Amino acid sequence: MREQERPMTKIMQASQVREQWSSVINGVYKGETRILVEKSGIPVVGVVSAADLERLQRLDEEQAADLATLERISRKAFAGVPPEEVEREVDKAVAEVRAEMRAERATQPRFPQNT
Figure 1 (tube, helix red, strand yellow):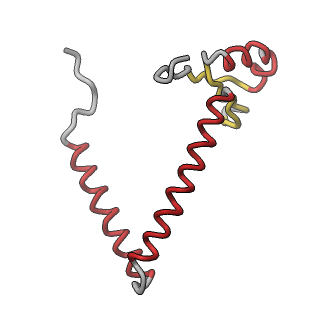
Figure 2 (cartoon, helix red, strand yellow; figure 1 turned 90 degrees about the vertical axis):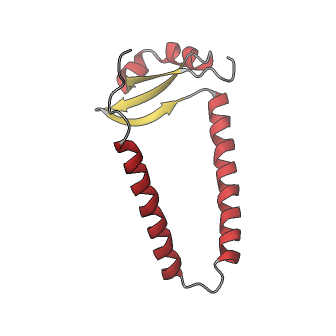
Figure 3 (cartoon, helix red, strand yellow; figure 1 turned 120 degrees about the vertical axis):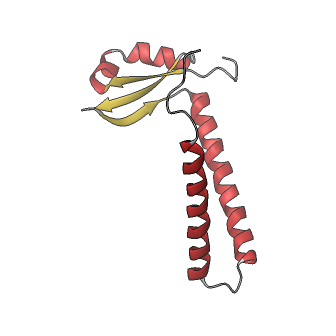
């Protein structure tokens, strides 16, 4: 499987997965599909290839490292600033970004137009 190609995600009931386990494993192994298993209509587990799992674990590690870096930077940048003030400023910045995003979405067509 080439890197830019991603397997199709298929939703299956747990009972179907049990009945078709061998086929499910083969499709996942070959990189043809990922399986989202539902039980009573509730997503409960995913079946992914070993390569997908390794990539997920790598992303988790990268995210943890990135968050640790942000924590170090923020401790230095906001040293001496009361946490309440930092929280107020963060809330204000988030509200501004959300307002900008809402305004941007309001100018975009809701449905793709046929050309």
